[in-house]
Image (tube, rainbow, N blue to C red; front, top):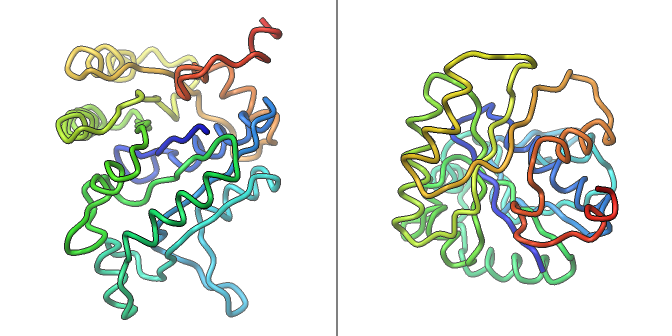
Length: 239
């Protein structure tokens, strides 16, 4: 069973886009795959029902990807505060139980992160604590913004210090044909100042694209075998 937690350096980094792309790609390679979001804030009410905007986005990209969540809050606050505002308590044991139950059904499970890795979930646990309890590797999605390098170094080094398995990082939203030093220097700095490897460079896609476009972008831009630490026979056949 393969599992991966996808986090990002900041909002709008394209984390959920990468989660969807990895899920669609693994399904195309004959791995049954799901996306699980332990906690979703900023829930959207549609026709009287609360929906997860991130999981809804994934379904619009590929409706065949199975999606799950444990907690869904309307508030856009940190999970701890969002739960308090709605008079709920985030139960870490429930999250771990559902994580185990869900991931046992699939060959590959991708956890789409919420907020930052130090976001408090309860008075006792942060998101980083949850990753440690799950023993799940971390993939960091970086967008080439002004704060990208600083945020990435802080996240990757802190996670490593806390004993989290760092699978690597992916740089997303790269403008096509860009030769900006701000962008081209990011991989070198990340690999020099952390133990993480850059496992992919993904160009920005147009707003309207189909699953095949996304899968092609992922396969061309990301070392999928390194992301999941597995040898994939279909990739060898296609090479």
